[in-house]
Length: 488
Image 1 (tube, rainbow, N blue to C red):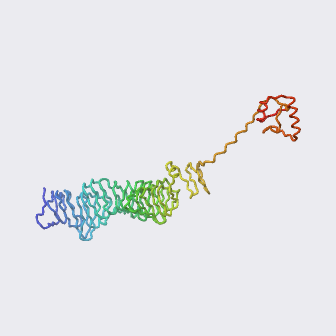
Image 2 (tube, one colour; image 1 turned 30 degrees about the vertical axis):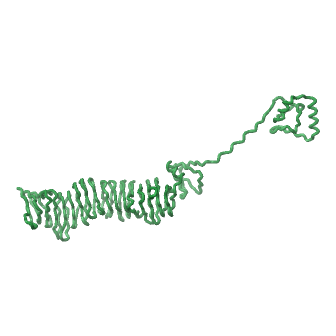
C-alpha cells in the first residue's frame, strides 16, 4: 500500500533502519539510519529533507523518487559510506568525522551538490541537468566525468578537480572566480560549450588534455611541468597569464589575448600558430630570455592614443608567417625574423622593429614582401622586390629565389643629330667658274683647299673673271653652302 511518513513532533524525529515494502511518501523532514526493501521511497513535493545517519549503504530501497525540491544528506561517519546511484535534487555529504564516501554508479542532480567528505568518484559520471542555478562544491575531492546538460546555470562554489572529461553541452557554466584543475591520468577531453572558465590548470600524472572546442578563460592558463595541452586547432581566448611549463601543441590554432583590465604574463618559450591581441591599452609581459615563435599569423593592434604594450626585460619574438601590427609600444624586444614595420608605434631598446614609413605602408597595402637586411638573406619566396634607392651590402640570395630588381637607372643621353651635308649640284664645276676667294669656302666633310700664297689665289681669280661669266645670285648661294667638288 501507500504510506505517508510525517513527523508531527516539534523535535527532530529519527528512525532506525526502515524496511519499505509499499510506497512511502514524505510529508515532512525525516532522519533515519538507513532504509531498504522492495518498495518505493518518495520524497514528496514540498522541499523535504531526508537525512541518512548510517554508514555502509544507507539508501538501499529498491525504488527512489527524489520528488520536488528535496534534499538528501549523508552524515554517516567513521566508516566508508556508499552513495546510491540514483537521481537526486540536492545532495549533501556531511559526516561529523573523517569519512570516505564512494560513488557506486553514474549520478544525476537537478539541484546542488555539496561535499564535505572524502569523495571517491570511481570512474563514474556526475551529470547536472537542472533548469535553474545549481551550486557545485565538491571540496578537495575530484569528480571523474562531469557533464552539464541542463538548461540552467552550473555555478562553482569551490575549486573543481576533474580526473577525466569535462563536458558542458548546454546551459551556462559559471566558474565564479574558481579554478578548474585537470589532474587525472590518460587523455582528458574538454568540451566547454562556449563556457567561460576563470583559471584552468593542467596538472596530470600522465597523458594530455585535449580541447574539443574553443575555450574562453577569464583568468590564467597553467600547464604544469611534464603536462601537455593539445589545442587540436581550437581557439583559446585568454584574459590573464599564459604559464606553460610543460608542452603546448597548437594544432594550427589561434591564441587570443583579451581584456585590457588584465596584465597578461607569458612565461617560458612557446611555439604558437596564430597569436593575436587587438585590445587597446592591454599590457602583455614576456618572461626574460624567452622566445615566442609564431608559425602562422601574428596580429597585434592598439589604437591611436591608446597603444597595445608588448614588454619585458629582454625577450625574443620570431614571426615565421604574416605580420599585422600597428599602434604598439614595444620594449626590450629582439625580433629574430624579418624587420617588423609598425605604424604609429613606439620602440624602446628594440632590434628588428621599425616605424612604418610611407614606402612600407604602400608596400604593406600591396602585399609586398620585406627584405631582411639584418639577416643578409633574401628568402626563397619568388618575390618582386622594389629596390629603389636601396644600397645592398653583403647580401646573399637564397637558392631558387626569383628576385626582380626594379632599380630605375639614369636615362641615357640622346645621340647627337647627324650634321646635314648639302650637295648643290651633281653637275661638275670647274675651277675657272669660281670667282669667290678659296679661303672663304668651307667644305667640312670633303676636300679642303688651302692656298699658301696669296698672289697665286689672285691669279686664278683674275683668270676666272676673264674666261667665265657667272650669275651673281648663284655665286652668292654657292658661297653660303658647303660645296662638293667633282674632278674636272
